Image 1 (tube, rainbow, N blue to C red):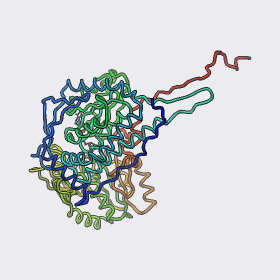
Image 2 (cartoon, protein in one colour; image 1 turned 30 degrees about the horizontal axis):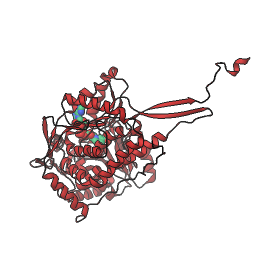
Image 3 (cartoon, rainbow, N blue to C red; image 1 turned 120 degrees about the horizontal axis):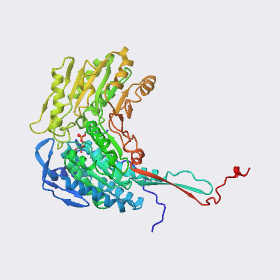
Image 4 (cartoon, helix red, strand yellow; image 1 turned 90 degrees about the horizontal axis):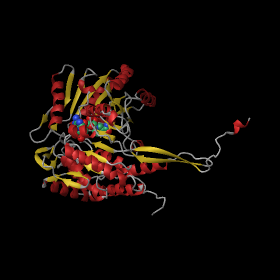
Amino acid sequence: MNNAVVKIPEAYNEPIKEYLPASTETKRLKGELNRQLSLTVEIPVIINGERIKTGKTDVVQCPHDHGHVLATYHNASEVHVKKAISSALEAKRKWELMPWNQRAAIFLKAADLISQKYSSRLNAATMLGQSKNVFQAEIDATCELVDFLRYNVKFMEDIYRNQPLSEKGIWNRMEYRALEGFVFALTPFNFTAIAGNLCSAPALMGNSVVWKPSSAALLSGYYLMEIFMEAGLPDGVINFIPGNGAMISDIVLNHRDLAGIHFTGSTAVFNSLWEKIGENISKYRSYPAIVGETGGKDYIFMHPSANTNQVVTAAIRGAFEYQGQKCSACSRMYIPESRWGEFKKTLVSEMQTIQMGSVMEFKNFVNAVIDEPSFARICGYIKRAQKADGVEVLTGGTFDDSKGYFVDPTVLVVKDPEYETMTREIFGPVLSIYVYPDEQLDQTLDLVDKTSEYALTGGVFASDRQAIADMETRLSNSAGNFYINDKPTGAVVGRQPFGGARGSGTNDKAGSLMNLLRWVSPRTIKENFVPPEDYQYPFMGE
Ligand code: NAD
């Protein structure tokens, strides 16, 4: 047996490729995009390493061209969900006993496969299947995913190294056991990296996983599952079961051996999962770990001392990159009256330069929203705004789903700071602005804090240091990721651990050691080298 005290390779953030027009990486990616467009992939359910074609199929379309079918996928039925759970429980016996450095090697290998061999494949699948432009795909499906895999290994080592103090004659140790049972990973459509992290983080810590991917991100999800298998993940450690979320959750959350759920998605779905766990609480062997990162209503607050160009740039990138479909997307802004004229002019002129269209044309900053229900929901907000008193449509306001689900980046200026687009998560390219009287700065900061049920991300812009210090304190609970003179999106693994409280989730900080701690159940071991042989204490000698 190899008894070395191993040192894992140093973690580092994956460099972002630029995809300049004639570069090798651009040529390679374009070739891969065309290759994927020429295929109709068949996506099976994968249980215990076995690819199962259930015969109950649906299709994966390009959001920017919904007539184009990229893949057909097989839906899991009840019998497959039960099989996935039993296969996870069976695989866990060996998996949790595998030396941790061997587990680490599998995920480090997956990171390198993604960084090198499969970067184009995952980026292209994310572009075509989830409608991301090349840069958005690169920072997600390659960089963030690789970062999660590399840094999680480092965090695992940090956790295992954390040991209690010992004393003369006593050796205290801490064992970080995997949870007893299986973990359910339920993943969203909007980040390939999040899907990868939600299923792999618990697995890395010795757990086995039933993974229900989003039906709107299946192509990238399937390729990722194949990469994990190629990297050497033993059969059954992660089981991939596309299908109906409600049906799958009903079975999973009713199982005695449910040890935890790792969820990212909407607040409403997370609440329903938590309620179901509450109803079933007496059925479980242990209290399930409940980890959920959910919705946001993220803000930018402009102080009168801020720089206009910086705020406009943050607004456009923060609100409209990936069509506003980031949990961290800026969707409400507060601009001081004294700066409004200048801000408005710069914003409108910049907005006119934004190009929207297919992901195949790299000049497009904005692509399509994910699917028909999203398109309908976002357009509903825009149509109501167009009719509402006290709301001005400053830019955009148009939409077209004849070929793809396109919504023009839309800026609304609202008189009522509690208007629905200031308070509800829209999850689309709609930014609402409230112009506040400069003398009501304090009251407006209260509004920023109290307007929505969420507390995920927020950014303040100012050059006045006292104002920055005051805002940092005043807005302490308004966001789990708080930005000073920066947009509220784009958290980097290992640099800005991510998550928020209130309606935004359990704040277990993806991309940090705190998240991995949720997937272990520590056992304290005290060993006495010289146990006492007489029950009487010295004080009893009186
Ligand atoms: P969603 O809640 O619709 O879906 C998430 C997952 O749950 C999917 O796999 C889906 O199939 C499944 N699901 C849907 N309905 C279900 C039900 N009734 N029972 C069980 N499972 C069900 O979310 P989405 O549209 O995929 O993602 C967008 C949401 O995710 C937004 O609210 C966004 O803010 C949030 N999000 C949050 C973070 C974060 O870190 N806080 C990151 C990304 C996305």
